[in-house]
Amino acid sequence: MAIIGIGVDVVDIARFERQLERTPGLRERLFVPAERELHVRSLAARFAAKEAVAKVLGAPAGMNWQDCWIGLGSTGPEIQVKGTVLAVAKERGVKSWHLSMSHDGGIATAMVVAEA
Image 1 (tube, rainbow, N blue to C red):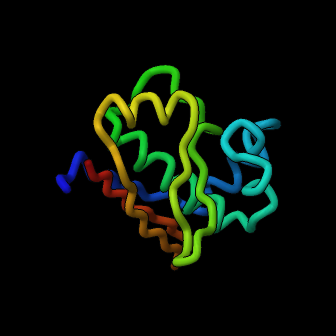
Image 2: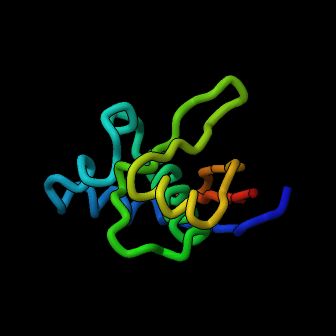
């Protein structure tokens, strides 16, 4: 296995919460239904993870935010992709994803590693 890319992102939770409150429809645009009802700190961490995935893939134009979501696997959170994100991941040779997320002190962070 070879590392295709590493992405890291940090989100200010309070700022993210204000954006969700100010922008009608943003929650629906960014998150799949299973994510939308989570606490804002968890949403911020998931948004950081999606941003980290975008960085790994070179921030492709036309990326649909709902084509990447964070599901819960047997060992914890895991990246799920379809559509636009899956197409770019396949093009770049991504076979597996590794994810670490955290939130503390008003900050949410995520690190993503993509492997071939």
